Length: 166
Length: 147
Image (cartoon, rainbow over all chains, first blue to last red; front, side):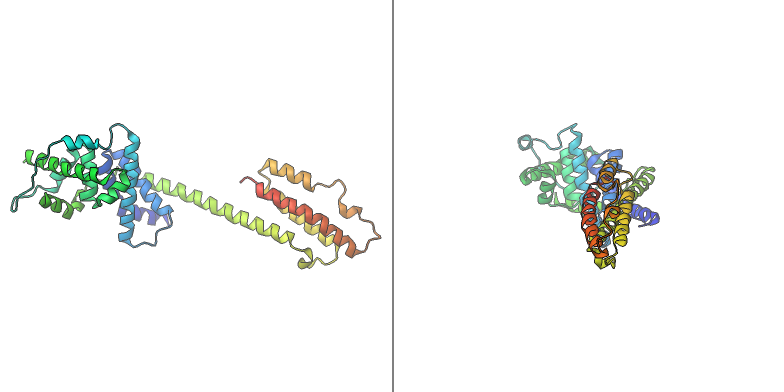
């Protein structure tokens, strides 16, 4: 691969991979490092014969794994809440009604960023990255039941945040 | 909240709005080039080691197959050439060079000690056996060479 080809590869894939990492890590510098590690891993792995769609899927999954590893290594805050604590919280059921105007995606992005980490992480992986609970459980080491609970509560918190800013 | 959920899933790509820091591309290319240099160096080492191994293997084959026949001088010269190649490989590894020196240095080469009464065929056979053993030792030293 030439320098020119490497540059073209970077320009195609850097933005989606960077955004995936940024949503998980919430830190530009960490996200840039994870994005670079992911792209370099792909280029050095000799797996360049994949189709563009397969390449994107591989990059996304690898980026998520690397970002979660980095998140754990920070150890500032626990990534996941205690399952028992989650069960104690009350969740009012809510959704947007039929015909009700949906918030724009930028507002949703800001509301997701405002959620505490475990909710934001699981909602990101489930709703935006499209992973199943089984995949998230495998990546995070959490039980599926805990993840479902985090996700359900996270969705309600998200709706609350969105409604409060309407 | 299936409506909001479906809406987010359908529009997830609109969330990829952040751009990587401006210096990230240069840093990426720098790291890519460094990785490539390392990989090229590994390939050179591999090719170099493979070539050296083949050369030594060939040197250790029954020498008659090299057409050296029963010429003792040809056998001795062949040995010297193989040792010279080995010296080139160990030039940056002091420990291996010391071992190679003690194995191959002869105060008086066996070639010069063989009595003239022996036929060329007998001399060549003795030299093949003696220098063949030495070259197996050289081969073992080459496997320890640090690169």
